[in-house]
Length: 115
Image (cartoon, rainbow, N blue to C red; front, top):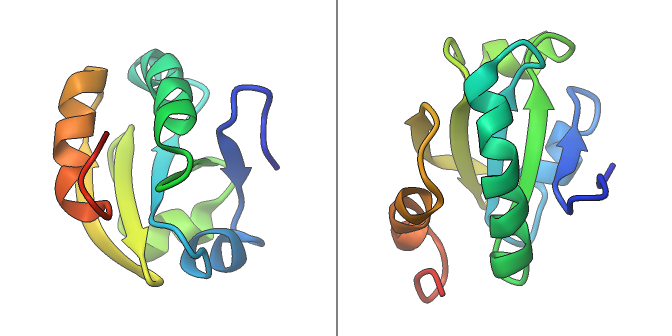
């Protein structure tokens, strides 16, 4: 489900279809409502989805309500960001970061680099 801010919410039930089966690279934020750094990343992810939406799908997965996917990818800290391309995780990052740093870290996994 895509929220008003352009960042989709995924669940255990639709993770394979929405993330692993996506045509674009997908940035997944493993998040939780109780996580202050996760909330800080909200505006960063919204801006990233708007700026790079043609080359990157941005989604969030709530770790508390989606334990299957969280365990499958051994997520222990929030926020954890994973980039999936072709159904496989190709990059993992832990912790909140400024927008500029996140963009720089994504450069090597997006086609043509980041805008």
